[in-house]
Amino acid sequence: MELNENMYYACSLCSTENKVVWHRPKTKTWQEHRRYIDLDQTNSETPQYFWCLKHNRAHSLKRECLKYKATITFNGNEGNRDCNTKQLSHNDTLDEIRKTVTEKSNQLDWKKVIGSNSLPYPCTRESRLILPDIIYCQRDPGTNSRYSITNIIEFETKTPPETIIDKVKRFDKSFEEMKRKNYQGDILPRIIFLYDTETEVSLRQIQKMLDGIDYKHLESVCIGYYDTKDNWYNKYFSNI
Image (cartoon, rainbow, N blue to C red; front, side):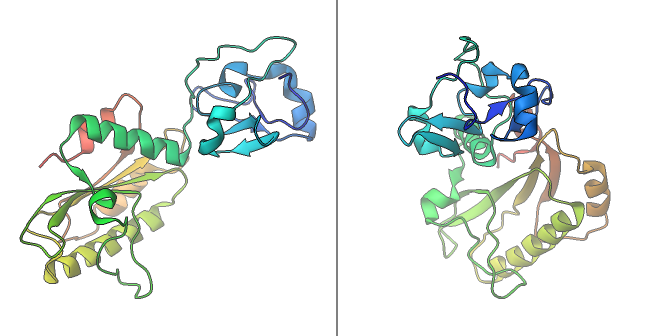
């Protein structure tokens, strides 16, 4: 389909090597930059926005409709249809993380074995459970849940240092209670915060603030960047 004013497109002028900038239809920037359309990214495998042939409209991250994704052309060109998406969405990144851990580790996905992505004991805020992005565990017949948590992975983009510190304190408190209630064995869990490489958040500042926290019920807290070459896995993931 030829690009029209109801479609989003990736802009080569505004994008960086790792971050794809999309322009919203019917805006001044859309009109001024359309000659800079990045057809490779616009037609990539899992773009943030795509034109759905089934619903005849633009979708944002509606992955169940990817099979109906139209190929966008501009002046008759369509770019490289087999191009990988430079910048994955939050959920796409989590899928890639799960794929990596499945291929490289024997640890189990907590949500698959327990049926929930929450920790089994509330954190210090009475009305809320901690809901991490991904939890990994291993069998531990001596616990009430029959499993003990080994790694927790959170993917972040803009989360400020203060929020990360608050999360760590809540994790520590929650695991103290889980241990006391026999929902966690002798294993101490590792918390891994992976940031988008394009984040403006200072990881050095987070690490400096973490150095001042005395947590007793976590094995360690790791802060780093997510990368598609799986360096994060080799550096941070705890294979117990």
